[in-house]
Length: 473
Image 1 (cartoon, rainbow, N blue to C red):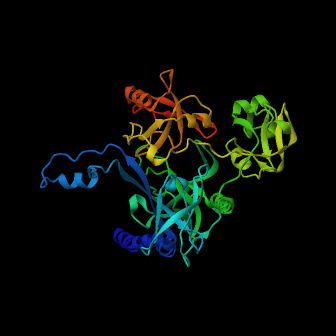
Image 2: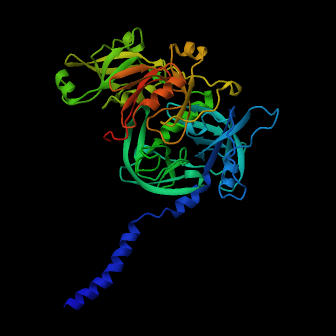
């Protein structure tokens, strides 16, 4: 009897494995068909180097000689003056029209002096920027080509959590790399990212994948790979993509006008907790609680009051406060919309004429020849410079430093163009007056001490917390 059972198991086991294997998806056909629509994007930013490091005094037969010769530039000769150098970065993109329009991330091409697009057939093209939107991190670029293969657009609304998805891109410069995973969540809100309901996946995304497409199993693009959550700078199982419908709406506006127009109503909101819902007489936590109304703004003129809870906007339910900026932002400025609010225990409707959200105002980049000497990144991985009097006047602030460039791993969501005005640590806040003082302040702080950067980004003021090495995660 035992022998018969053993024989049966031996016969059944390969069949079971075969049946299980048949249930696993096959990505080969998708990769073969969609691979040619994905491009490698390399950018070059030319910076001026006023002080050039010296080549160490080592013999030419030393094993390290070739390393230093390759990575330390040649000293300028007599009369040559300051030497420029090229700062390079890599990213991905995908072709959305046969005549050469390419979609990518705004941060991939930000501050680039030259953009090169390389196709899978090894052809290279110089690209021009049609437009870029920092709020959604979407950019549209154009190459002079025709008859190009293009992606097919999918519907992110049909995505289901647990569904297989595929990313194609150039992680670390390795062209047309295919990785796969599942949709982990939909409609994710990330800090300081109010206009994008991110698709969260466990697809392996690394530096260089940014701007590449996220495909469903039908070979349709459902998202633009944009961010990862990481404490090391590498993939840790959490990656985020911009839904393709959001990206295409942005690119349509960029192609037509070169900018993105968004609605605003002029309120400051916060999440409705269970305790707040109980105190306001709501059956369950929902909506966005208005804790401030801009004087003479659209909401003020329409009758919105502090303490109102916005439950519906233009017929769309607001289940959480994070949803309201997306809904309002996607509304055409000048539109009259009905807003359902909960006020003093009853529901009522008000009508508001939506205003236009101003574009981000950031500290402008100075002409290349007037930049300060090239400096090393501070221990947080970015470089800063003093604000000019013009920048202070434009941003209407008295002091601070502007972030010039972000390099390597980041411990906080600091971006080029941010203005850091103060640092808070251990209960003490110090105003930032100069780049030298700011970097000295960072150097004085212990690695295990948590600090907060006071940041001006566009018209918003942010607080970016930087946890110490020993702080709990």
